[in-house]
Structure formats: structure tokens, C-alpha cells
Image 1 (cartoon, rainbow, N blue to C red):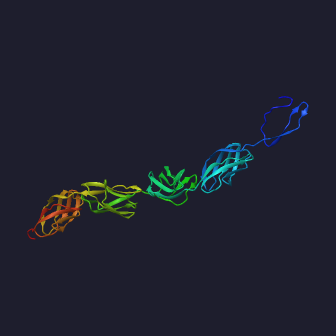
Image 2 (spheres, rainbow, N blue to C red; image 1 turned 90 degrees about the vertical axis):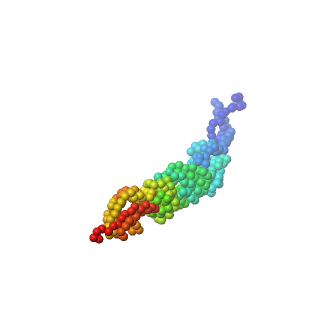
Length: 373
């Protein structure tokens, strides 16, 4: 500093001002000084993408935002609020899908652009498989377009248990629990929520009430009828661990199946659909019946004698034959039948028991003429 020079630090200010010097002798004339406003600079935008429908609120961070006069997404002006010299919030206007530069204009100029991407609303084309159990937990695949950045997958009002974005055209999801019937499936991304109708069907587990006949030969091959509910879309019919030789779905309440070969004994029969696996009904694989005795083993040729047939494997008797003649009978147990001998010629006749797939070896029964008859 000297009688002819002073060095000073300019205070903050805007526009053009007058610089004066004051001494004990008074105040000098003014000399003009102009404050130059810095050009705004945007360092970030969050989020940096949104729907083509617009309306996404974004936060712009940077410097030199004081006095901002406009915020533009490409060439389109946006509504905005200047929060501070370093932050502005703005609402993205509608625009076609693609990337635009966002700029801020202040009295200091227009900033360099920062990219913002407009995303199309996602479109779903299919869900595979399109049905499953009420309990959920199964994985499905959604196919469509614009699926990048998926933030949620909903089955009706229920959110998917989890999901994975495979690509822009595919998302896999784990189905949540639900009630019976169809529900719309939707995907939400920063571009919006899909609106077209794609449905997923929640199916109740099948219920079996009967299998008719409930027994058959160990060689299989016999046709049985399964009755119950929710039998449509059956994917398997099993006799124990063995799949039916073939089956035909007659209706939601009936399936006709051909029993596969099996071993002597009882097995559970089940039906599986996308809704789950049914309860079990019992089917019996039968061995050949065996007659060990007839009591009595003879009677009048006029018939009418009550004969007790003893043996094994008699529960599923479908006929008792005296020679070729069927007799009336009652199944008492697996080892006993009560039979009424039919009339016939005197002499010996073979008694046989018939069950599904088998006929026993004959045991002799003798018809006699009683005295006086």
C-alpha cells in the first residue's frame, strides 16, 4: 500500500458495483467493478432413469445453481425447485424412450449435460408355467420387453418371494402363496408397471375319493376309474412309486387309468397336478386265490346247501363257480366265504373262486341223491 495504491479482497456480491475509498479527508469518486457469475455444473442426478410417462422426481447435485432459471431434459423444460446453490429437485417431463442430457441454466450460463434415460413401460407376454399350487414356492419365468431394472413382481396383490432379472426380456420369480383361481401378474421397473393381462392360476391340490375296481392282478393292464376333485391338468397317476401305464382325464372329477404291473399287496394311488399331489387311496395287487377246504364237501343234487369255503386271497371274490355254474356267496373274510350250492347233476364238480385276474384251482364238491328224493 502507498499513497497511490491499495490492495483489497473483494467481498461477495453480484452484478456491477462502485468501488470507493474513504479517508479522513472524505470519500473518493466510484470506479465500476463487475462480479462474474460462475457457470453452473451438475455432478450427479438421482435417479438417472425413469418412465417415458414422466413424473419421476430427480435430485440434481452440483455447484452454481443460485438463480437457476430453467432445468431441461433434452429440449423440454421441467418443473423444478432450487433447494440451494448445490441442489435442485426437478420432475422429469414425458419423453420417448432413450437417453437425453439434463441441463441447468442460471445467469452464469448453461451447464454441461448429464445423461438421464427414459425407460419404456415393461410389457409382459407370457408366464411359464402358468399355474401352480396354493402354497406357492415354485419358480416361474416371465417373458416380455423392458424388464431391465425390475424392482418388483406381483401376483395379484402378493409380491413374489424373490425374483431375478435374467435379461431385458426375461425375469424368473418365486410364486408367493395365494387363493384358488387366476391372478394378474405385473412387473414394475423404473419405466412403470406393466398393464396388459397376463394371468397365473392358483390350483388346489387334487383330492381322490375312490378307485374302482380297488384291486387287480399283479400283471397290471386292467382299467380303473379314479374319482375326486381338481383332477384336470393331471401330470401323473401313480400306483405306489410306479406310474400308470396310461391315463385319460375324463373331467375335473374323473380319470381313467391302466394299472401298471406290481407285487402282491396294497399300494397307494395318487394323482399329481400343478396344484400338488393328492391324498392316497388304496389299490390291492392280488395273487391267485387258494381254496384249502369245503365244509361240507358234499350235498344234495337239488342244491341249497350252505358251504363254507376256506382258503386265502378270497376278499376280492367276484364269483364262486360249481363247475361252470355261479353260486350265491358272501365274503366273510380273506379266508372264508359262505356259499349256497346251486342244483346240478349228481357226481363231483370242481368249485373255484374267481377274483380280478385270477381263478383258483378247483376243489371237488360231490352232489348226491338223498334217499326219498
